[in-house]
Length: 141
Ligand SMILES: [Zn+2]
Image (cartoon, rainbow, N blue to C red; front, side, top):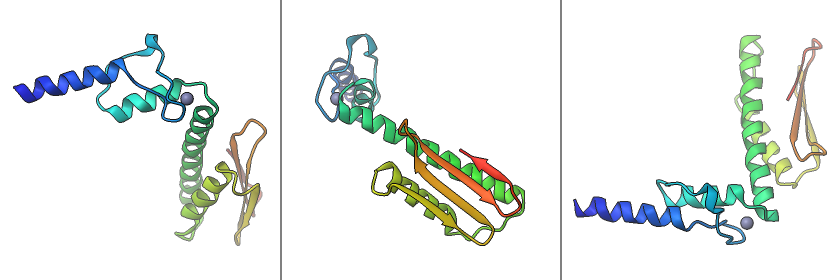
């Protein structure tokens, strides 16, 4: 019984004070709610912060999500159209895409026997992927 009370108190503290993980600014009062973990509270404070690092962090998270969805869509497409992919292809696209998102690579084109994959970061800092197949089919994400 005592343990539960302590846990509730700790959770209440999280909801009162949570800070951006980069600049340490306190989260906005109107967005305070109860969080299950300190990590969740910090993540939310960072999500709503306007500092440069937080903006970049949000953009990066969004791009990683977009990249993973694109890779999923691409592999589903290949599976559906009975295009055989080497098992290394999806992890390779994810790895290169992450390097693009982190600005370690400007742009990249991969060419396989029957597929060409062009990857770049667009003007609005969004990752773009284009999959071209030898028979003219194209997927743009
Ligand atoms: Zn911040």
